[in-house]
Image 1: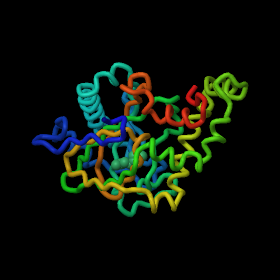
Image 2 (image 1 turned 30 degrees about the vertical axis):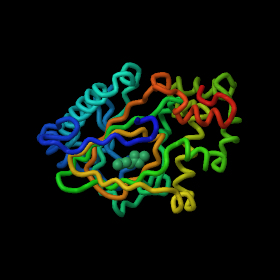
Image 3 (image 1 turned 90 degrees about the horizontal axis):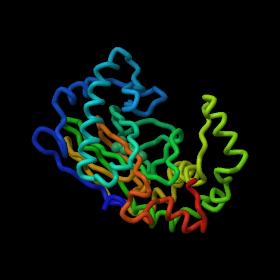
Length: 282
Ligand code: SIN
Ligand code: FE
């Protein structure tokens, strides 16, 4: 099961992957370029705004948006078909296009994709809900090389306290004056985000894992060579992951409600709350 930390894999099939992607969509994506120096790591598509960001050559925006809209639509329909209980409550997040070769990519440490990490979004706290991502390798020729490690229960037991869980568990709750003030400023349009202690910890944990040479070196590693045309689904906050090589991948994210899990206790937030002995996600 996905929430136990498995990767759900769909091999390439004639005409597409776990779901078909029209050849003209693939052609539009493979013709898209992205400036490696851009502040954006990937090209993003926001389904609710029907807009793309992260492109340097703005003349590509229309074509890229149309192709990403099509991928997003098909990925969401595919995911909803196999995961109806999640789909009933999930929040649709962004889609992304990863057009830059990952092998040898030069990025600052906390943005590096080749170091094992669990995902957390700086601008979009999840309050204990979970990050489910559907990836498709849209390269016609290159595999995408992934590394994963033991999922969140084992990871948390081994590293959460070392990473400072107790400090984060002591952060102010939602009723504190400090967080109320942040919400007011956010409402006024300022670029500040009200985070639960869980969200603050996960953001920190993401960076801490990447910076921890001992963890990177000694943790268990599982290698996946994902062929052109394949699709895979994974909770990227449950499964530590890294991409070592490959280019041209598409991805769609949904935020799955903790309440819709078959077993709520498997959510990373539930695991950390048990360790901390208190609620962390409000
Ligand atoms: C990541 O989510 O860390 C990168 C995965 C990928 O682009 O294949
Ligand atoms: Fe990631």
